[in-house]
Length: 247
Image 1 (cartoon, rainbow, N blue to C red):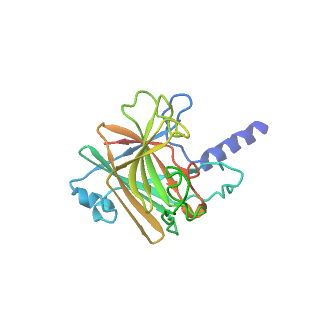
Image 2: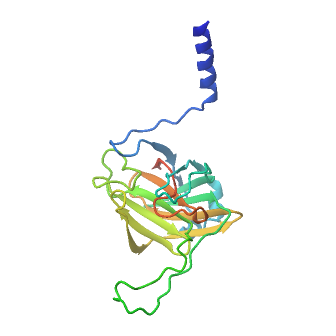
Image 3: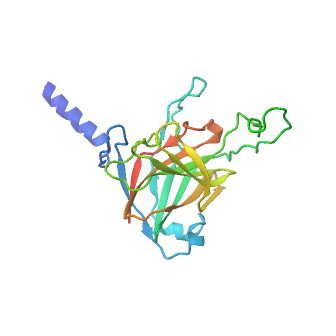
């Protein structure tokens, strides 16, 4: 009788739990997942691809982006309330560029006022700009890719590591699109190098297009999203596992 009940429960669990996609393994300490996705081909103009509202994107299948939430970084950070925005991405490969349109639900548009300069008697290199609103944060998104040629497993999702650095393609509401680099937690450096992109907010949803260099047949990417109204900043964010983009 006990054996029969175990068999029945096992069958019920198997029926209720959805099948999980196969994940590729990574190096110790790195990411343990790479979900395969396909980038569509398109003959549309770059300007059309850089418009997130262009009809060319309607012909591309949406890929759901499964998001996690980082744990609180400080005692003053709020606890994870379990909410996750509904997010998806559409991908188009054209020549050596990958156009990625990321969409996610967000009922608010969050930015921060620009810092101002004030007269100060201190050293000029120390007193440049003062923050106007330290309790306000921007909506933002980022696509992370391995830096250079990837040998072996994917980098750690915690901003890579010394042996597996990453390139960060950031969009910040009100600031635009810039490239950063990282080689582990707390090592992020931002450049002033812009890259092509597009962002709009309509009907409680962000649409952000990233134009990323892609010179190989496949490329791992990971997604991060910040919601300013939920006090997201720095490492406090939503993030995905690795996706393997193929032609």
